[in-house]
Structures are given as structure tokens and as C-alpha cells.
Image (tube, rainbow over all chains, first blue to last red; front, side, top):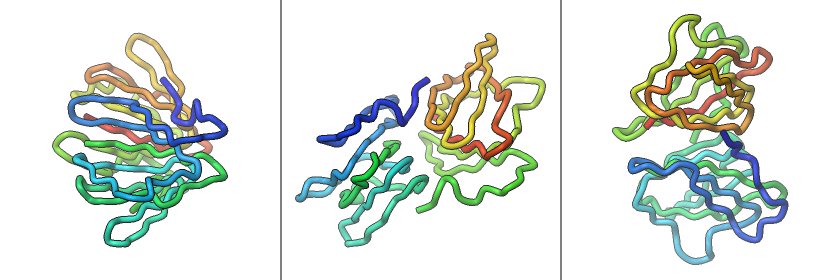
Length: 103
Length: 103
């Protein structure tokens, strides 16, 4: 057993990406952000589908068509493979904990 | 977009099981409990592996070998296929929201 909110440093120079579970069919990952965003240039263009939930803090996702979605605690969505997106804001006051299921 | 904590009735006569995402490779399910436990007889004996996290409240899982694990907010574990288990307690004060990934 482990806890999704454990081992979060008070200051985060960079986002933390950690695999929680890896099988041949899916990958569960914890992402911890604190004010970070995607790199200024480029978009995530993933070969896998991604089911994503925010468990603390908040994050704002922008799609390449300009749509923006703010995810707060408990909000979840599904990002299809090759649906280009980026993170344009995350909470700087508290850690944003994302749980992502890639499949 | 949806929220994992939305649409939870104040009183729960029975546990709620809701599929969030179904593909041929995995199923993501929300389970909401409020004081309920597994049926008095029998054990869950699942053909799929289950990755499980508690997002609010708490639940106590017992394995057939007698081991007991209390899962509180943020706690997660992996239950392998055919690892027989049951839920012997859940919070009666607040809803226990479980997120389960079957794979």
C-alpha cells in the first residue's frame, strides 16, 4: 500500500513524473506540479489514450484548437491519442497531483 | 469533463457502482459506499487485476488469509486477479469514494 499524496517536496523545481503501475496494457502515473506548465513551444502528441484526474490543486489544459479546460480536485477527462494538448497553468500555492492512466 | 465527487446522494441504501471508462483493455469504475460492506458470506474472486485508490472516507479490506488493510484518503493498492478479498468496513460518516481500474 502507498499514498498518492506522500513524498511531495515542499518546493518543486521541476514537475515529478512517477510510474505507479506498468503492465503491457496500461500505465498508471502520478504527476506532481507546482506552478509548472508545459514547455513554451510544442504540444503533447501522445500515442496512447490518457484518462486523467486531478486529486489536489488545479491545472489548465489547452487543446490545439484553442479550447481550455480547468481541472480542479476530482475533475477528470479523457484525452484521446494524438489529441494535441498542453498544460498552460497549475496551482503555485499547493501541489497539483494528477493521476493519469495511459492505455 | 466530470467530477468524481459529484452526484453522491446524502443517504446511500446500497453501494453505487458506476463505469467511468470501458475499453477492451481496462475498465475504470467509481464505487461509493457509506457504511456498507461486502455480503456476509463469500469473497470477491475476480478474473481481472484491480488497482484501487480511496479518494474520500475510508474502507477496510480483508484478504482470505486474514490480513486486513485500512485504506484512507489517497491510499492505493493492487489486488491481483483471484486474490480473494472482501470489504469489512467503510465510513458511515461520509461517503467513501473508491476509484478502481480493472485490467
